[in-house]
Image (cartoon, rainbow, N blue to C red; front, side, top):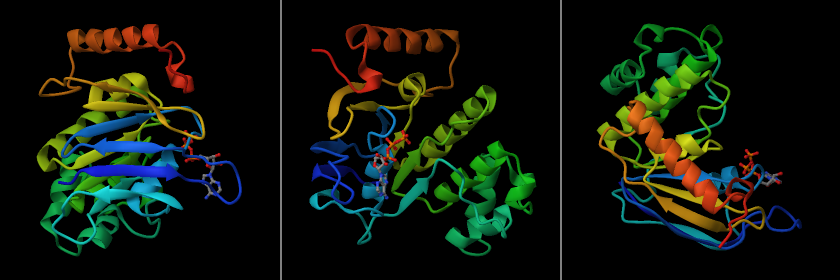
Length: 247
Ligand SMILES: Nc1ncnc2c1ncn2[C@@H]1O[C@H](COP(=O)(O)OP(=O)(O)OP(=O)(O)O)[C@@H](O)[C@H]1O
């Protein structure tokens, strides 16, 4: 497990005005942090910077001590990005190596062990997402980054995937950072939520959530609690999801 310290002064593409402004803070060890912000504010850019896929001209992303030089990072993108010419199993083998027992275990935890030999084109959108989540976990990442992994799924499938994701995360206890547009999803899963402004993007509000042991494995009471947290937050900061906080 690792914690991540953001010390970003600015990030821009080319000569345009900066996408990210001053972003400082820490993603906590073994915890789930959700990033919520308006469209185009640079959420994917931020994840890419943490993953080392983008650099910042000014500032840096630091990692707490890790057993390896670079932390093992699992990245679940908005679209599953599976290799179309490989089966589900082969897509995981690419990461974990052949005959690694973790492959069967992880596919089983995602409920798709029977799709081992299917190609991505033979799988539904939800099943492809499951394979992409399994691919990230099979690598036993110290850090897991997720970019809106449940958008465009029907509600029951998204719910089931969230639960399976949480169950896998509880087994591995990676540090997890996930981007979402969905405030209730963030409240149901995260230990801390960071709300971002419009560019040049900064953190305008943070919210800590005291999660019950099973997180979103919710009953009606839990759903009411999530609604209560969301509405009290939006009463205090009506334009928070548009990137504006009121003090
Ligand atoms: N490789 C790139 N080159 C130039 N501009 C880019 C690049 N990647 C992103 N941008 C710009 O940076 C800004 C932030 O994009 P980004 O995808 O990080 O936002 P986002 O918050 O994830 O958006 P959304 O919520 O719509 O997915 C946008 O204006 C986008 O056009």
